[in-house]
Every structure is written in structure tokens, then in C-alpha cells.
Length: 127
Image (cartoon, rainbow, N blue to C red; front, side):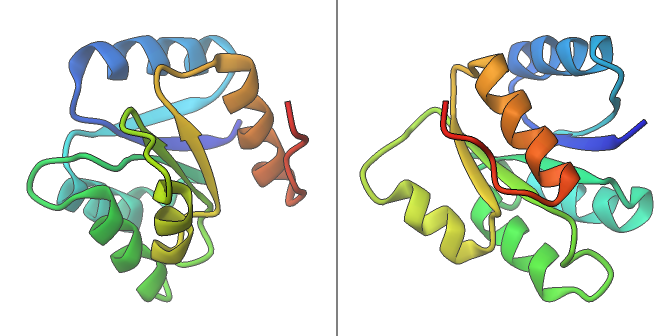
């Protein structure tokens, strides 16, 4: 069972997404801000991180940069999640070190395809 770290400050988004992932057999751990996400990634060693980009304490951009700068966490795939999908946000997320990008509200089938592809070490199919 793969472990996913969900870094999300919005309680409704956290609850909805974590329940759906658990239902599909994933072990889900949760962080509510970017700094806690970095700390938990180091402690928990998840197989994948879902990173909200608009977070308190440390935003998702800086949290991802910190994760990718650390030898202990740099290999963990990170999927950026954002509700504010502006032109250039995907490029900005990839420049910060995100391996994949998705928008909110989450379209579960599309996100699961990206999660499964990254866990398998392949490129996600375009849906």
C-alpha cells in the first residue's frame, strides 16, 4: 500500500480527498501547512506528495523547493494542486520541482492516473 502525504490547509478539500484516496487503498498522512509538510515528508517518507500551492507558514512552492533540495526527500514525487490555475502556474510548479500538476476542484480519475503513473515510474497518460 503506497503512502501519500496530502499537504492541504482547507479542511473540506483535505477530508474529501483523503477519504477518496483511503477508499482506493492508499495510506494517507496529512499536513496542514508547508513547513509541516516538509517535516512530515522527512519523518514519514511517503511514496508521493500531493502539495497544495497556497499554504500558510510556507507556501507549496517553497515547500517543494525545500523537499527537492534535501537528499532525504528529493526522490519523492510531488504533484502540485492549485485552485488558482493561471497561465504559467504549471511552469512555475515544475520549476519549483513538482513532478506533475493538477487543478482544483480535483477531477479524481485524472488525479489518480497521475498518482498511479508517478508511483509506477511512468509518464501519466493525457486524459
